[in-house]
Image 1: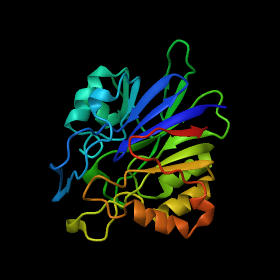
Image 2: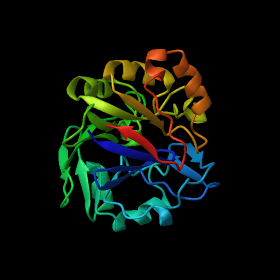
Image 3: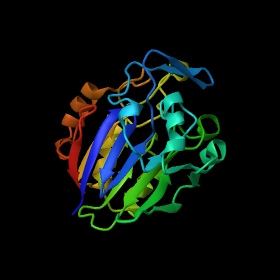
Image 4: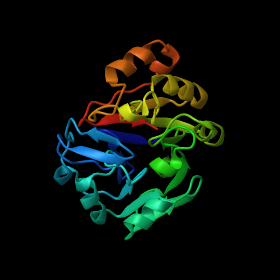
Length: 262
């Protein structure tokens, strides 16, 4: 049995502490108020700052970066943090852009995190598509991450990344035994693209969790930016209509460690 401490810092950014490892996902630490352009007429304003400033995060062994091309997953301060961490794992295209010690993975590629006195963690990149069919050339590559190590009781730890629910994501439920799922939700949308969604919403979460059957689910990526169409209240209400799913959900209070058995 392993004990995981997850601290939701804001947006998609979480600090994962397990078996001596300190792993940070999608580092976003800029102050609120700025509007960031994502291209093709899309943009978003950051409405809240990080619950923990970058200067107070402490040492980080690895960053799991689902994609580097959007500031709501890697902002200016987050980029400044990357050279100080032990490893950066991201998309293959992102690793080319970032250079340095970034490792690039295609979906279903694996890499290892190893350190003396700690269990090795196998990191598997999982499929993700950050928008409707055909959007990849515009929005760019994204991956999720599955983390597996010796001693997990319920199954692996999966971070979906920014993705809609599509066959690639559903394939994870068939190929991996996931015990803890960190879901990027919020149902991202933009005025210029109308009703199109670029991340999962509550209905997608219900379908995915029913397929996945994890022991616990932690929603992130639903607050702090103007492009989120479903905030926490919306998600709580919608998930409440699916009690078999709502019973698995653990809501992390921003900046406060959440303990999970994995």
